[in-house]
Image (cartoon, rainbow, N blue to C red; front, side):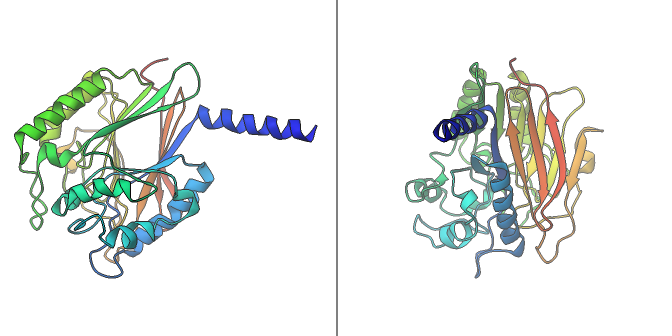
Length: 325
């Protein structure tokens, strides 16, 4: 009888875990390039993420870029991998796969070394500059598809000193066009219940860097045409939720992993009434951090923003618009 109960409990856990996919998101967490190679906010974010990942039984984590401030890494053996990532996000609950994209600060260094690190680390996963992953959600063929893109290849590398300047355009038009083709082909053929696109530069943002014009011109129309559920980005050091009234695409910025910037310079550069949430406290001591969790079922997707300093929920939004029933 006890053996039967144990088996029943096991199958129940398996059923529950396949019925919902939960993961954590963090962007712009990359510490400093001087000892101790972290910021207080990054350490707090890692600690809080560990607690949340354990509580929610997170299946994996996503990094939205700017993984190593301020100039990326030099090679695959760079100690920054250990000092800023492995030894910081060290909670047992964070030892599952980290799906990674690259930010502008990563491209200042050796971006290909971060791809190569996939073969070194047991949890770091960056197989290419852009890629896609699909996860089953419950029964009846429901799926979650994640599309990871490299917005630096698409829009260009920002100036390392004059931070307010927008991306100048792609360094290689050929490489950018190859990625644009891949993006449209990938999302056009997707029949996923939930389709999320992840890039470092935001499409819409009210914070320091603001909207990215190239992405507004070329990526936003694709998201709308192919009914993408949400676009998630970093780059601006804040937490944001933006949605245009006439559009079902949700835009989330999760770029507060190692500090927050209180700028709202671009408040008037987004559609009127579209800003649903913004968190960016003045943080001269770099002690405030933030991140998000995403939980997906066949019927709804919930995103929650967290303040890592106080381990508190800041905001949550539930989307009830799956792409297929």
